[in-house]
Length: 180
Image: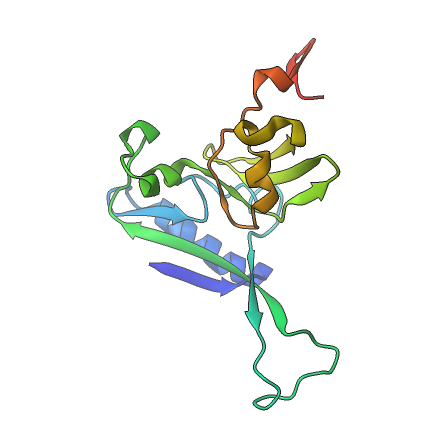
């Protein structure tokens, strides 16, 4: 089942309430597939009082159908909130996954547009552990660190790379290894 609402605070509340209703059901009856990679409490709704939404560009009708403003472009960005629920139980661990579709249940999802800077890209994710996380992918990370993929990633895409930045890019500090 797919539930889609406008990407406003009110639309997100409807989606979030339905999500909470599904969460309170036994896992054998229904499982959350998307957009969240977890079955826990939404990290944006409770502590931050933000709303989760995504964007899709749509084409305007031609001016012969509806008159449009002369300065208006041919596309318009619409925001929406959604929830995908599957009947039955999904696999619990990534080791049990046999197909790429099943492995994608455990990937993080990009919840904000990627911020491209000189030499690096900043990405915000909703993680499998049910938390919000920010990753900085530098040009020096190369293909194995996901920089080439991060240049093309769009808002709402799944991130197949791990959360951890490879050790060769980390620096030792008093509190442990850090990127900068």
